[in-house]
Amino acid sequence: MADMQPVEPADSREFKPQPRENKQWSLFTRCLFVAACLLTLLTTVDFILLQFTQQQHQQSSQQPEHDQSGITITSASISASKTSTSVQETNEAAIAPPEQFRLSYDFTSQAEPTIRSYVFNISRGLASPGRYNKSMIIVNGQTPGPLIEANVGDTIRVKVNNLMPNESTTIHWHGIDQRNTVWMDGVFGITQCGIPPGETFTYEFDIIDQRGTFWYHSHLSLQNTDGLYGPLIIHDPDEKVRDVDEDNIVMVGDLYHQPAEELLSQYLSPSPPWSPGMPGMEPLADNVLINGRHRYDDGNLDVSVENYPSSLRVDRKATVRLRIINHGTFLPFWFSVDNHTLEVVEMDGVEIEPLPATRVFLYPGQRYSVILTANQTNGNYLMHAVAARECFDPMVDSFYPPTSNLAQVRFQATEVLSYGTTPDNSPPIGVPWNHTDSASMVPWVEECLDLPFDLPQPLRPKGAYQVGEKNHHFFEYQMVLQDGAYYTIVNKTNYVPLPDDAALWRVLPTNTISAKTGSERETWNFGPRQQVLVSPDPNTAAQIVINSREMMAHPWHLHGTAPPTRLAPCI
Image 1 (tube, rainbow, N blue to C red):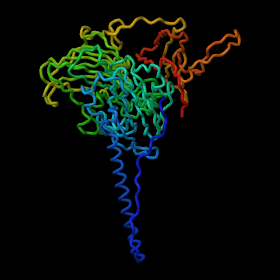
Image 2: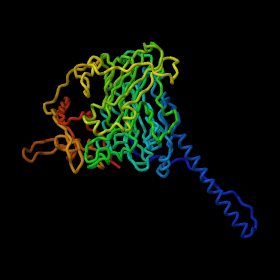
Image 3: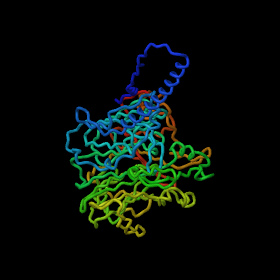
Image 4: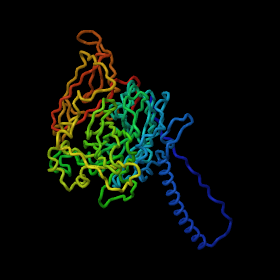
């Protein structure tokens, strides 16, 4: 079971006074000496604090280390204790290096199952995604967080040290089934309580019959919006996707300049500043990021070139896999590469028969792998992540004016696909795809919709599930106006999280005797307004029918497929 324990304090240093000579001084001389000592002491303290802050930053940005067993450790240091976590607020943070998103062939997918151990130090720091200075939640000194890689059959173990002084946190492993370890799913109020400030929690789970592209992110409030997310890749020596010359991760998402908690508070008010008198309108992002980077031009800039979009350099004729992940909070995206046809080979961790396409559509949380062949003329070509404006509001021009920050970057981010030795600053020679005719839109022929269910063909087909007689579920959801703000309700009930508990810990059935019939029956005590679907027929599947009564598209994501068998109290 995961451990919950205090973070070890940082190393302390002992300073001893130097011996003094025994002399008799005049009162004036003594006063002068005391004043000089005070000035020296203040200067020394400033120097010590400066050195300590620099050491903290250097520790948080160390390269991955290895333990004696050869298992990769993302970071081996815990750089703060409860009494020193305030230092984390002033740390500078780095944008994840471009090399992190280029998978290395040094990783052996044929290795025997093992434990892949990582250490995540979570803190706040000032970062500049999109060249805009913002307080962000960072992992080991960077955002996006470090890459996690494992093989099918491996165990992933991540020790999370919460170094934030005032915020709890959790980590959700998006797309991982959590078979028999549902309490490791990392969902606040559902599978666990938050990890308190200054505390440690260790996630440990097995990768069972899954492979492909996944990601991790905080699942407490909107912490992922402020930078707490990163890629997770599962390899398989028996992978059905064909071999490629280059394997790359492309994380696309929206960026808000304002802190996420402020945005949430304003969104739940009767009159948000971006839509006065019109509650329920989501705030429009300020920028679009690709792998944590993009340009943005206003007066609050970090002009360092390290935060500009990087180039993806490939050899001509090479086959390139792009693992596209939408880590965003609100915006859906179209992804395309000028002059290059894409071959869709994976959807949300499922290998499929290759589908030709000129662009890919992703809602937040979705992942696609595509393969392209670098068969064009040597030069630079743009990869585009374009916000699907037609999907996030029918009245976008009315509520999101052309002067908005996102409009200034044309609702998109770009990254350069560079052939061979073509200089990064050479003008792109590619031509964007024209997606105004139906032929160029295939296979996404309808805007804002996923692919038809019968179109993608899995390469590992499974038999039909036998649904239990009592395991049929139906619910509908819609937005309703309540107390001046809009809330989502499911089956006419809005969800209310348990403040000091986890809903799945309450779903273990207990046997009771019916007062009417005298027979034994199972009862549950998960409380009202928890949106728990109980499927009482064991060893059979459940069918869930979802009906939307909204004009807006919204993704649904499953958390937890079985109740926990071991429980631990919340702190």
